[in-house]
Image (cartoon, rainbow, N blue to C red; front, side, top):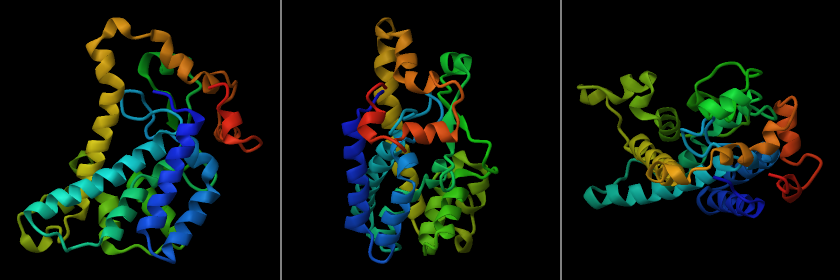
Length: 261
């Protein structure tokens, strides 16, 4: 999948609108300022590193986050249909959805994902990006929380748990929080479960949008499409964090950066 510069800009406006509409001051202003400071990375970041996952293309991150916010609000309505959910606020829900994958953006001006310079891995494994080894190892939810705390953002206990546990039982470290037969040690808010469900919906929809047409009509798949989609990355001799930021438009506008993608 490929997003145009116009689509990326539109997604970014939706991203900012979700903050403006749902987050109260002073966190609203803090979030807008923070994301503006890493705008070059944010705009072109993928949501994952491999084509076999979801949204592994420029602009995929914001596209995914917007979908998770929307899905979260729908999931919340579903839960409220069966039992009124009063263990968290709407702001906590949207705040958690907006920032659940923040760790994928790395830290400061050092992106979490960088283009994979190995043409073999791109072609044979769909590994369009790779983890940036300039960063120390952290689980993505942990880095998300770390980044928020690092810039002085206040987060509630509900938001902490939602961001930390949004991968559900796909992450073994979450088991003590999610598997318990003792009522006193079980989660006292459904927010982490709702965010996990919303993230699953968004990720699955993104995967289906990309793969179902190819799997159902393999003869229509163009083997060169994947390579062409990311040619501006693969043609760089030494992809790096700096090259990634140059592509994002450090010296050019976003539209100019996308002319040859």
